[in-house]
Image 1: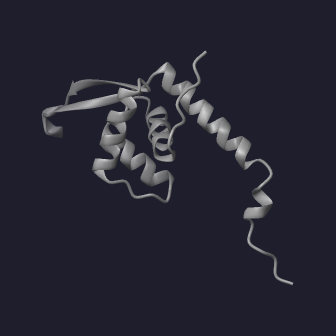
Image 2: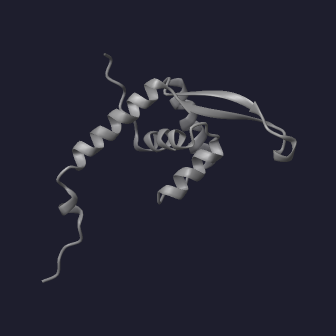
Length: 112
């Protein structure tokens, strides 16, 4: 089995946002990340990352026509592929293993 290429932290956030939304637009991904984290996400960063994840085979996309009341322009919708699910699971496992045991080190120092 091929070891997946490690994901960057923002790539992992984007994958998790798409997983949560099941079928996500770029603006939905931005909103999901901004709602759940302390990060502000630029439009460019979101779309560049979505494109890069699709090139890596971790996302798939399709174009859907938006209703006239929503502007009527075609919109791209993203879904996480099986490879994307594996890559996210691997990255989350790596983070969990690195995090194990350091919670106490991250706590604010106790005053005497």
